[in-house]
Structures are given as C-alpha cells and as structure tokens.
Length: 221
Ligand SMILES: N[C@@H](CCC(=O)N[C@@H](CS)C(=O)NCC(=O)O)C(=O)O
Image (cartoon, rainbow, N blue to C red; front, side, top):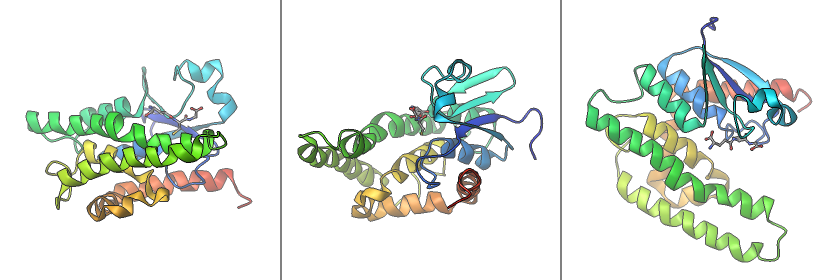
C-alpha cells in the first residue's frame, strides 16, 4: 500500500506507445515491484513536462522522475541503481558480483540502448528524409552487431551474471524495445532471455500498472 513516504514517480499522461510498456517509467516500476516497495505515480502531459515545475525535477523535461522525501532523481539508470542500492533484491551481496551487475546496467544503457533508439529516429523522426531508406539498414546492422555480441556472452545462461539482477532488469527493458522490429527473433537465446524477464511476477505487475494507467487515460479505446 502507498504511504506518505512512498516514492512518487512520473509517467506519461498518455503514453505514445499505446500501453505496450515501452515508456521508461516501466523499468522503474519493475525495479520497485522487484524490491516490494509501494509507489505512487503522477501523470504528466507532454506540455507539462516542458514547464518549469517539471523541469525543476528533470532538467531535460522528460519522464520518469523519482521523488522520495527530499530526494529527486531523473535518469532511469540512476533511479534503478538507487532503488537497487537502497532495498535488497536487485544487487548481489558479494562486492565483485555487485560491481559486475552495475556494469551490465551501464552496458544496457550506454552500449546497447543507443543503437536501438536510432530505429525510432531513422524510421519516424527522419523517415521522410531522402537518405532514410539507405540509413535504416545501417542502423539495423549496428544493432545486430551488438546483439551478436550479447547473445554470445549470454550463451545458454538464464541471466547475464548469475542470479537475476538490476543489470538484467535494465538489459531486458532495453531489449524489449526491439520486439516490433523482429530483430530479437534472430537470436533465440536473447528472445528467451527477454521472455524470462517478462515472465517475472514483478515485471507483470509493473506492466499491468502502466497499462491500467494508459487505459484510464484513453477510455474510448
Ligand atoms: N536517458 C533518459 C531518457 C528519458 C526519456 O527519453 N524519456 C522519454 C520517455 S521514455 C521522454 O520523456 N520523452 C519525451 C521527451 O523527451 O520530450 C532515462 O533513461 O531516463
């Protein structure tokens, strides 16, 4: 149950992903669900995100943000790391294993996510440019290169480094964005890895919560 001390996160009032759980509040919800911490959600419109009140919380006018007492955080890497360090369940006790789990979080955000985000730029934001058709295969090729490497490292393990950790939570969250492209299906072990992440009860609660929010904001659907 939500208490006055519960963290408050922000999420889209109307997520452009149609409730598919691809907006980044889902990964924060997932982390909170994994550690069993109740949270509240404040929904913001695209216009409100750019207003001073929200920019005071998030300098780039984006979601999600995370407020816990006096603490205000932005950037999902920082938020999930904070949750994982504050509550047990997402980072191993062993110091070296913990450092490696954090390395996988950074790998997800700094090495794997950037080329994946380029799909949206190439297809939608710059899809009408004369060079768009030539660029898309290059973008896909760069993603495929990363997936080959990640797939080789994962092998037939369930998770990236021992037990499920914040590193897996972040990597699965990032890879989920690839599903519409079909690229994930080229790598059965990565597709199964993402499936294992989605099958976690905490992920399902997070997904259902963001979908319920989307449906509440879009009653006509
Ligand atoms: N690196 C940031 C990215 C945040 C981000 O791109 N948020 C998106 C939603 S998933 C957003 O607010 N987009 C609207 C905008 O940038 O105006 C993070 O991981 O938190």
